[in-house]
Length: 174
Image (cartoon, rainbow, N blue to C red; front, side, top):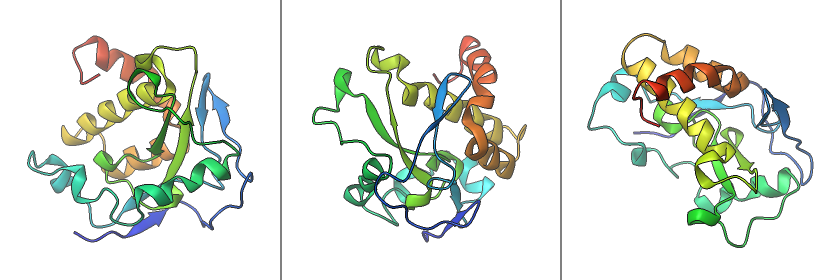
């Protein structure tokens, strides 16, 4: 498996404090200049449908976990000192998730934080995980093309919130 990131728009590594998250439908979305989202060209629909395929095959294949921490600086945030278990408030998130063939390069990674007062299950990154699971299952079932899922989540992951909520209410992976 090779790691080949393609981004949905021209991308250059941002400067410190150059990025601003936006709010859509009450949730943060990344600055598209800094995190346009992208995909790994070697991941296919057939691979995603194969029950033996795991995201570990492409995780950290382009940049290391430590290198991904640069995104905190781009968005003007300090990396949380305690950020695990029930105290996890941020996640370095792939905008287009690896389970949808998302790129593992920095143009597809952003820091998704908060809200601080919410329980872990209701933090923004956990809510986005529900959208990711919904879209991945739609692609695997053939109801949505991989390209549509990738481009849709990259442009505005919050557009799928209502569908993901229905999916969860009907026993989806949530």
